[in-house]
Length: 518
Image (cartoon, rainbow, N blue to C red; front, side):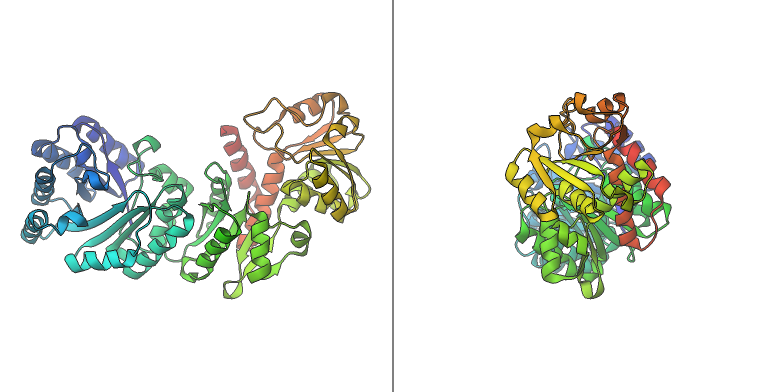
C-alpha cells in the first residue's frame, strides 16, 4: 500500500488545524506535520498539533526539518531532536529524521533510545538534494538501512532531466514498501504518480498549489481525479505526452477521462523531455530497458516529432508508411520485445475534422482547391493527407525555402505569405500559430479574402474560436475549429494505445471543457 501523504505546513497552530481538516476532506491517506514551518515553535505547540491530527485517525508523520535539507525557521539541533523524541512519546506513527543528523551520536542516539522504548513509532531516514540527483542513489539506501535496518529510507532530489527519474524507479523496484524516492521539479512529476505502481511507502501531495512543500508537488485533487491515483496498482499501464513544454497540455485530462470512461487500468502523464535527439533516445532507452514500468505508449509533440521518427527508424518495429512520408511521428507504442511503433495521427485528426464538417468522405477531397498556410509540422501532416487523396494544394509560407521544399515533396504549388491576399480556394487551412493565445487579435488571412463558398479550418484551438474563424463565420463560410482536429487525433491515439474505440462523447466533452477553462 502506498499512502498519499499531505504536508501540513502553516505558520501557526490554528491555520494548521484548518489545513488538517482540508486535507482530510480532500482525501489524504496520511498527514505529515511539518513542525519546522510553525513560527516560534515549542513542545506545547507540537503537542497541540499532534493531538489535532490524531483526531482524524489518519497515520501521522512528524517532521522537524534541518534548514540544510529544506527546513524552515532555522531551528537549533537540540530543539529539533526534542520535537522528534516528544513526537515518539506522544504516539506519532512515524518521525522523519535526516540521515546526516541521525548518524551524529549527539542527535541520533536519543532518537534510537526513544524508539526502542516506543515500538509503535517507525523511523523515516531521509536525504535531500535540491540542486541535482545523488551520485550513487542505491548506495545511499544501503547506508540508511545499515544505520537503522528497520527504517523506511527516503530520498528527495531535483531531477534536472526526466532521465534522472529512472534511478529512483530502480530503487523503489528493489526496496518496495521500505523506500520513498521523490524526484523534485517539473521533470520529476511522473515520479510522484508512478511511485504507487512500484509499491513505495508513500507519495506526497499538497492541498493546493500554493501549499506545496517541494517543487513539482501535485495537489491531492489532481492526483486523485486527473491521474487516477486510487486506481493505480502493479498492473497499471502508463502512457504519456513527450514534449517541451508539456505542463499546460490538456492531453492528460482528456486521455485519463477516456481511460476512466472505459474502466481501463491505464494512466496518462505529462513527460517533460528537454534537449534533442540524444536526450530523447536516452529517455526511450530507459523506458524500454524497464519493461516492469509498463509504459506502453506516448503522444509526441514539439520539439520531438522528428526525433521520434528517427528513433523508430533506428530501433523500431513498425512505422506507418504515411508517417514516414510526412517525416514526423506524433504517436509511439511499445510493441513486441519492447520495440517501438511509430504513427502520425495528426493527419487523420485533420482529415476527419475537415471531412466531418463538410459531410463528405476523404476521397471526395480529390481536386478540391486548398490553401495551406504554414509549412511546419502540422502543415506537413495535413499536406500529406490532402496529397494522398489528390487535392490541389497551394502552400503559403513566410519563409519561401520551407514552402518550396514542402511543395516539392508533395507535388504542390507554393507562394509567399504575402500572396494570401490573392487566395482563391475552396478550402483554407491555417497551420501557423497566428491567432493563438495570447495574441488572439491576429489572423493569417485578410477578412476581405473570406467568401461564403469557402470552408475555413484553423488548427489553432486556444482560443476555441480564433479571429480567423469569427471573421470567416461573418463572411458566411463554413468553419472548422482546431479543437476538432485535437479530438480526432486524440481519438486515433486512444485506439492505438488500447486497441479499443475511443469514447467519443467523453473525449469531446472533456476537450471542450478543458479548452473552455483555458
